[in-house]
Length: 412
Image (cartoon, rainbow, N blue to C red):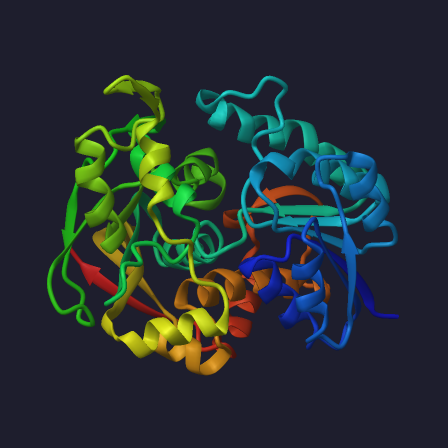
């Protein structure tokens, strides 16, 4: 008998997972649940195995209701609902997958408890999933997610690791004003906050837009600048440095491109502040004012077609892992380059943007491991903690979607 997957959240990421699982022979039913009935209906209408449900994810009982009988619960909802979905998966005895890391699970959660929230997630939920023989995997998009699995590939060729860089450059630019191809509020929040890095064996905060690096890769037209960016990966790698990353002492997530070029001057001018201020007798929050003027990320085929018809300025980018350390007594740098369809190719293939393609498809590959019983673990893990066999299956499946890796080893 095939599996029943319950998918909560029918946005771009969730919809991609649903459609990919609709093609899996080991899956019989995909319950697509969201607060937005139209979004649910639009998705299930184009599926063979889809069943729609309306759910209020703020109510645990309602989440438990739609998750009944699930083999796997996939959470593609905002972070605020993470605790309810985790608890629901446990209540019905299902595996769990989350695109993010639902670290907002501590009562009276504060932003400065982010690392503590991840630690609490391992401590509190890992043993509970292990006790029922199930697995929870969190951070399963493109970054974190795909890039974490690629980082595991990079460190394989080292005897010991000193420093890891995860470098992402977004060079997709349309003639239309479209600075972000994913959630603008998430993008601006991540860019304007202090980042996280693992430096000299400690997880530390780093200045927004700081610690710049420059890289020139063969497929980029010019040398590009990348800076600190508030992301999960350095925290994960720091927590698992000895068990999964050959004793790494340093880890960074660097980001660059059109979005950074747009956000950095706004931040320097104080326009990404979330504090209230009075301007000409009116109380405003600069961040909210800026956000109100930004277009949402395009989702539909029609929106994307209109953008393409108006013209594209640039359709480039990179996702590169650099792992620096020792091999046979020599200092080496292992580079793993991730290749995936760009905007035009993603639209031609699937009617979606490049951001939707790599994030949604990257997430669906983690779901595919569940669907085909390829996980050999229980408890709770982040996406950097796959076994070597799980990593290999992930990228074998990714190649079928034209998401591929190229490895280069450079002696230093």
